[in-house]
Structure formats: structure tokens, C-alpha cells
Amino acid sequence: MTISTRELVLASLFTALMCALTIVVRLVQPIVIIPFSLQPLVMLLAATLLSPRGVFLSMLAYLLLGLIGLPVFSVPPYGGPAYVLVPSFGFLLAFPLAGWVQSHLIKSFSVLNLAVAGLVAIIIYYSVGLPYMYLIMKFYLGHTVNILQVLKIGFIPFIIFDVAKLAAAIWLGREVSRRLGLEREF
Image (cartoon, rainbow, N blue to C red; front, top):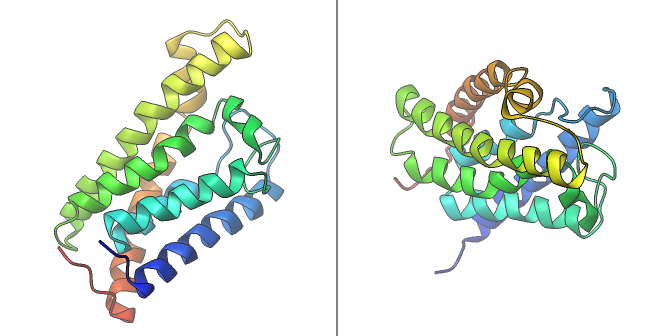
């Protein structure tokens, strides 16, 4: 199977958008364990507009750019292989899979179908990100944390915003698709 030039260009644009929005948001907030970011919005929007393979490649490219050392991540060290030891890395690690599953579940551009597919993606990245954060905080950083504390740090402050980002991704995805004539194969 080959990927079309159009799909490759769109995947590259979403990789660039992920990098750019991460850097912009990073400049306007203090350093925290789990930063507020627009990364979920970009991933959810990419999964709405791209094929499963396209969104997977886009999010994988973003991860690889950061892991080879480009400063495209939200918290210090901002990039490089050491970033795998940052508590929030598990959320980023889940983006290729979450986006792939979300895109695969989209069978139409109905709000209900897009919402269900997006909620599944959100569940996937929290299901990977929260245990990863717990393991890094407890066993690498040596913090005494329990599951409730991890939920207070990495889930409760963000879930409402992530649902709002999903709503924005649904609206943007439908509008961009309609206005630019982006056809997806369902």
C-alpha cells in the first residue's frame, strides 16, 4: 500500500501544526508536571481529517522529531531521548495509536460518529498516559504517589478541557472538510 502525495502533505502539515502549537503554548505557561497544551486538539483534528495511516504517521513523526532532539515537546528537556523519562511522555506515546483508532472508527461526518470516535481516542490516551505517569513518578522520580494523586494531577484538571477540544475538533473537522472538499474514504 502506498500513501498518496496529498495524504503525505496533510500528515506533514499536522506534524508541523503539532510542533508549532506546542512551542507557542509552552511560551505562555509555567513549567508543570502535566502542561496544558493544544496537542490533544491537533491529534483529534488530524484523526478527523486524515486516514488512520495518515494520522498515525503524523503523530509518529512528531514523536520522532522530539526524540531525536528537536525542542518540540512541552516541558524540559523539550526534546531528546531523555524525554521518555518525563511523566507526561505517556500521553504523547499514546497519540499515534489513539489517532489511528479514532480515524478508523469514523464512518461518517455525523456529530455522533465523530464524538464517539473522539471519546474512544481520549480514553486511549488517558489509559496509556496515566499509568505511564504513575510508573515514572513512583519508580524513576521516587515520589510517593498513589492512583488517586495521579488522577488529581493528570486527569481531573484536564478532562473537561479535552472534551472541549474534542468539540472544537469536531466543528473544525466538519468545516475544513466541507470548505476544502477533503474527501475521506469511509
